[in-house]
Image 1 (tube, helix red, strand yellow):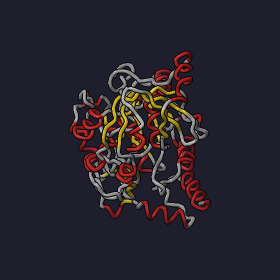
Image 2 (cartoon, helix red, strand yellow; image 1 turned 45 degrees about the vertical axis):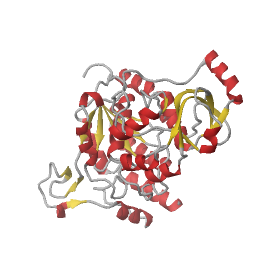
Image 3 (cartoon, one colour; image 1 turned 120 degrees about the horizontal axis):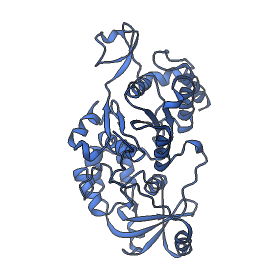
Length: 386
């Protein structure tokens, strides 16, 4: 592959207003009807604004919403697997009119953007739950979020006046235009992206380094938006990533940047969603591991691999790299997977997430074949503080 990979849809979206246009919209915004956004909607607004969700220029209207749910494509046929929507109550919707502008504010009342309201339409929560998440059970955290949303959806383009303020990870908050510029500056033409919401253990490190053998650079891109309450907090995870970068990765071939999205836990569909977004950030390849974006027992171990078969690879436009379950094999004397190791599972060192958490809580360091000691130390300290 030569040159930079095209953004999804061919153009990197930018919905942030500047100069006179911004002043004009900002002057009118306080007089508009107002909707208060929750944390997930603010994350989505930011990703729309900076082009992470290209080609979306706003929150989905009816046709794109139903097409995404039914066919995993936008109405124009472009692959897209997760609805990006703005909801409100029926009472709020009654105050609004299609064709008018609506101010979008955060919980403190700060106006972040203006929605150019094109459509007001019903939120089909059960259909969305079943089609996108594969279940209608509210025990699923993604489904629970859908059920907590308003009964009405508001669709239309957005014009952003003010980016959400972030006081954490500031040096790692790189927009798609910035990661693309960095890749170009470093001369990287083949870039593999890695999505994570967990600390990186030896198995993850193995996947990343296997992929790095075949490309010019690796972007470790941890999600730092909204996650489940029992997930390890982003600040703890970031310290783990920094320790690994300092001690075990070639600094000139790896970029650490944060991904400001909220986690959906939509399994296979979210794997495709994550791949497309990393394409917008400039990645040409994307690592898809075991049970990508899964939760509980809702998805099969490799469903996130199989779903890519349902798409034309050229339409997706980014190359997925599929990895099997990995472990340390005592007989091989190295990390391996079921694709490469001939030995019995009794020779494999594997630990369940529950067992690892139990060890960390007790102040015990997991074996070095499972976790780098620097990472374990950070996690033990975090467990003690909690």
